[in-house]
Image (cartoon, rainbow, N blue to C red; front, side, top):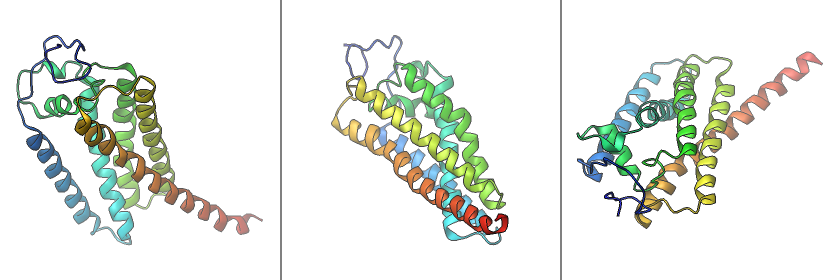
Length: 215
């Protein structure tokens, strides 16, 4: 036994410190914080002129996902010894808990660290820039959203495929596998796909409108 709740059981995590917070506390804090962010952006976006409801929803999404990338994933990337932390620091507790669904996080798997690093450093700020671009109606609005969506989709696909190729054996149980590994990550497959299609159509329409002027 490795003295930890992760799988495989022989995974070596010297200095591992058990969780201080319960699953309900960890998920509850994340849920409340997310609701506060979305509520704040929804309120602020209502003050922007000529912003549609869809764009306001997108601003909420980009703010939520951008802060998730920057804060949660950023902490993971730059805190390799989070599982050793001997205090109830929330961000460390998040990754101790999430590692039950994918122990590659606790093990600092190189593919996971790379994907999360790119996501935190590049995509996190880009998501927040998308919030501004939508609000200010910048001409690069849809191009930026499309680029970030493709980055998120690429990262999620690499994440799932590498797990599959390595035997898909990193979860402590079926509950954690479906709740953390599958469900939690599926949002970053479904939502970016929908946004990417919308942006593709918007960009294509813009070129079609320009075409008669240049012919």
